[in-house]
Image 1 (cartoon, rainbow, N blue to C red):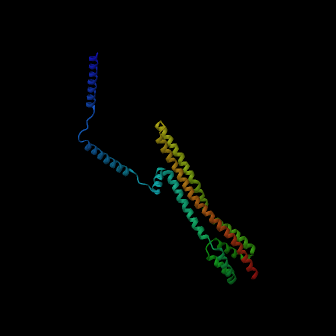
Image 2 (tube, helix red, strand yellow; image 1 turned 90 degrees about the horizontal axis):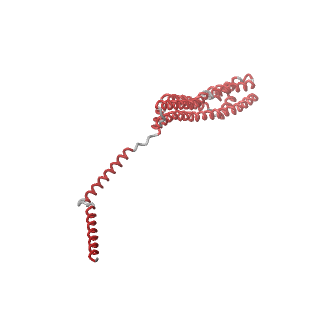
Image 3 (cartoon, rainbow, N blue to C red; image 1 turned 120 degrees about the horizontal axis):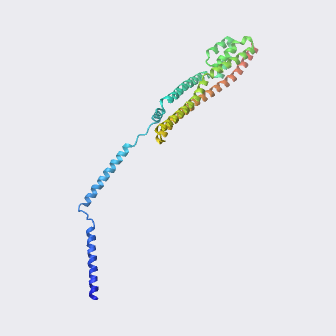
Length: 274
């Protein structure tokens, strides 16, 4: 029994030693130049990373200016409706600038004109006062001239002449505003029309392709909406000029009404002292 036990123990020890040798032989061996290989691989990785970062930096697009963005979007919207909307903006701005210049020239220092008119009327008479009004620029001087021209017919005729010619001057001040209002209304409607036509084109492309593609739908809708955006921008710009002209006309009108009352007082005073 002891011999059998010793044989079993010896066999177990021999089998365990052989398993350790096999495991040791199965483990990979590290070559002598491992550090050199690792260093070379690290250097290559660093170089590759640097090249990738440089390529990424070169691939970053430059920031575009607002002018370039607007130009690109304008071209994407199509030459048809975009050209009409641009023409609407150009004509509307031309009329607006002309009105602003006219209204600026129509503004007059009413208190200074009334003072000079009263002094001239007292010193030189009606003819000298008419000459002063003829040489003065603006609708207010024209109204005064019409009143002085009817002076000999009585103050009632002077008042009627002032009221009638004041209406004429009001019409001249408001001239051209209807065109600006028309362009303000037309520009967004042209944009909406371009949007509808663009949507129809997008659905036609879908029907031709036989399937719903995100590229077809998104591209068509984007082009369609660009016309609406530009139409609204034109309307907003012209609306600002239109409101400025209206405020200028209101200011001139109030000044004309106040000045005509003072003018009638001067004529009544001159009539009494004559």
